[in-house]
Length: 225
Image (cartoon, rainbow, N blue to C red; front, side):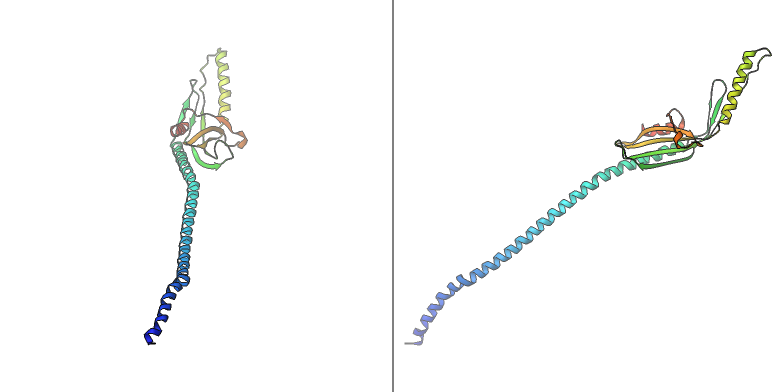
């Protein structure tokens, strides 16, 4: 038997076993490697998706918390700008004189010590309140006495009343404190009330006042109306 004849069975067997080896060993290994690579890719993709969802959730929460505070801050800034405008108007009020028909009256002097502040409050209407306070001096203008005839008892009686009134009013020379209170509303300041008291009185003596035609009141009404 020739060498070629002896090698043919070997070659034939090797040609048969190589495809079988590839099917039994190589292909499962390759498949496992590809599967492992696919799993790693899938796991990486899942992580990316989870990170994106987490970032989106955190962003929504931050926006939800910051958006109302930004709106609130804008409203508060506008209300504070209104307060500053009112204070500026009050500080510009000049001295003035008020006269009555009987000749008496009062000299009202320009406001002094104009201050303002904002405070938190426990109220359903508004969580913040603001106030403006100032001091105002005044002096009484006495009513002149009548020139009575010698036997005019009615005229003399009127003069007695006028003298008593002049004496009383002259002693009332204590400066007055005024206080305007506001609350923060959706559209800015909302006027709450006006108060006044003598400067020498304590905080329990605040009494209700009104916003009339005086310069200080107009400084309020011009801004909030």
